[in-house]
Image (cartoon, rainbow, N blue to C red):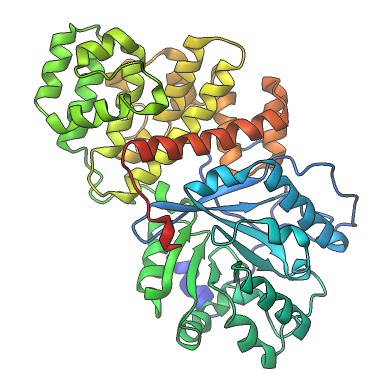
Length: 472
């Protein structure tokens, strides 16, 4: 990717041809890249609902999740002539989803057109928690009136972002460029955009000309791309990062299992082997920090225990081995102190796990729901520990259904994991297909996924994993 980026900076990179629509992507697909959609189709009527609104994580310089990027990947097809109506539908959908629950823990980037600045629903969004990304639509020309509308909204506390590369002279006259760019809070650099040859002047000039704006790097594909952001001219201005770079093999420095992780894996093996509770507790006594973390989490209000537990023996008595095993997996992600990447992987794993658990629990099968939770929780263990599947799972003796879904992408749990990944990517076509296969209503799927995202934030807060969202 670095070579292609350098070629792009030098003007040698060709635009990517439009990709054909794929069938259903494989379970293991991890890319969060948001590619542009074809816009040459005839306009069509807007849908009654936008279906699934994707919300992908945005991280700070410490690689901790501090915001979500809200957009509709497939809904914008065929709506060029009805962009304002589409934006109204998007904002209404977000309000109906009750995203304000999520904004108690994270910030939101919401994509709208410059032509929708007079939309009344904008004024109903929580100022300070939402940043509106102003997008270009066909035949758009930025006018003085739009800048005046922007000023009025900013007086209400609303904040804005834009991608400078999208605003060429056909959209924005040179005379108005400084007026518009100086008004935004964030500028976006899209690593997946077709205009990579304009990255060099953007990186070299804009941070100096508009020092008040911070930058978000979008669609950062690898740790190598992230390094470009952090070392480029004006790199001190990059505050936020979006993309699948956190899942690349060398994202975790060293990639070695540390002592605490080794001990957690040993305790999990003991639980699977039905070891005596005293033997399990003895392992925790060798690492008092692990015991403290586990008891703090188990005693969190989110579990609703009638009394606090003080020992592992009490925990086994009240919760059972399966539940204790389930929550021990959290300690694999939190054993590394101040490791933002591990925490980001934990958040993603918790969302998958809770979402799949809720789907499994919908029809009342408690054991199946617990095993679905494990499937989601362990689906990123290879990335965390930098040990490939199936090697990383072999010592844990997981249920066959879990192992098949995670390692081989097959079995009865595979469609649930596929659906969780489709929700992460905002792939509406795949979401609809998989929801139909699993016999789940789309609205219920949307609700469960947002519930899982909010639940993960509560878990992290109760576990005293803090992300500095106030800095966004």
